Length: 234
Image (cartoon, one colour):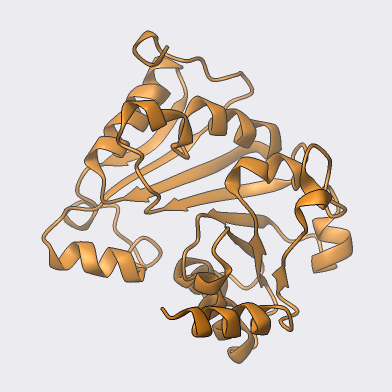
């Protein structure tokens, strides 16, 4: 994408009512104004709040919102030029239950409080395979602790990825900490779990499938205890 196109998309995002782009000073080491107020001050309803972390172009966020109009969907990514497509599509489709938040995932505890989130989707994140970057994985103990702090009781987290390494890492981490794994498959499209929702394909997923890479899927619950770091990660 050219620099000109990026600037055009950034400018258009500023005009979209379904895009939230806080300044760094609004969130660094402080709570954002919508924390614990997403239902009352942004959505103006009490529908369940579902997050997609690292939403990319927003295909999954928009597709979920189309299928479940009584949920509110918030795609989160730092790259606004990417989710511009999802935000624009949502407006063109008249989807009032979709929005996009431009921020780093590291800062999400500034945005959501206790029992505020009903479900999390993590779709094709960077697996951060180098050991020294393990803490940046969106399923590392650092991030799982953040999710625990904002998820409602019995809420679920979904991880869909082409990375067998990330799938194995996350599954082992959950097992180590006695967390509740609801679904685990290392080949989604050759499993009994692939339904209308799980068969939604992002741009990146379609590319991975053309390469013959199996898609993995984990669905799990994080109960109210802090996730420990296994010895091999210390």
